[in-house]
Length: 420
Image 1 (cartoon, rainbow, N blue to C red):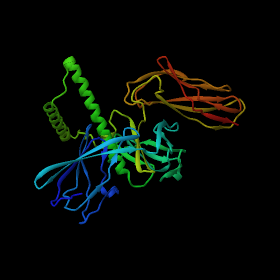
Image 2 (tube, helix red, strand yellow):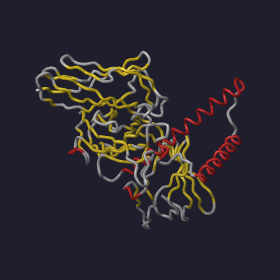
Image 3 (tube, rainbow, N blue to C red):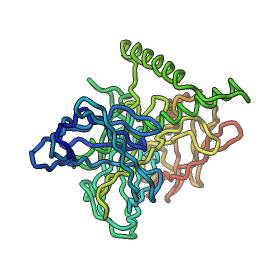
């Protein structure tokens, strides 16, 4: 509120935490009231650093006028913490500053654990499962997916598409299908896109907050990397950088960014592209909810495909095409079984593996049942087999084993065939 006789110009707000976002008023998060009506425009984020976020607020603020700006705050964990604001403005040609500190208590009232598993009907589909702990109760408004090359294809709980209520201390589950984006005009597989389970408006606030959060995390990583490098360089004589050194480094980085921008390769840290680096094959899952204390967003960063081979995790996806219902004939009946083995590891060095297939009792498998092969990340291989059913019954054809080095990988999903 401007209690003075002169208008306040060039109003800027610096927060003590990096994860603070002032949504635009058209998204329903700002309002104003004053003796002389004043239109409220968007608060513009100027910069982000580990020490906080700088915003420009609409100005001028006329004498006797007041403006309320609601802000989204991301807390590292539930609980209370102090949040400080420094407001700097120009009045009568002079720069002035005022500060404000408040204790903020963050209790989301919701908790969500999300997981992604490969779809076993297609090598390009994945199952997104969100397990929601109701806590103090509320409503799930939407589930948003921000990913590079992935989008929401469909939902299993159709009645929950546009939101659903969650009772206090209850458990709810929401399932959706993710699919790889088919490149088309204006959209490449490597583009970062935003899709959601529901169709309600309000995605912009959550996505803007995600950009700010990822930008701050990227800044922290850069600062830590610089600190480690300086310590190695200076050893016991290590000294923190001076203000002049920091400024020179920042100016050099800015010039490099401008050069990359001219070449069309620059990535702004608060851009949508920066939320999903090229070397990371995953998605950000955002759950929008309305709890007892108002709206909120919960974030989950999930890996869709492993970024490197790990002996504790199976790198392969195995699917099969086969007849599930077979009519028996005297002397046995033979059917084709096409097995597809895909290396799920993203941008990995080629994996050498041994492929082996067994046969259940009452079935004979012929064809390439044992061989060695090599698959690069994302590549797949088709293996055409013959299954001879010697009697009636129910059979599980899933007897595949892939061995990398000395590590065998088995597959739990069953391929059931009924021979009548």
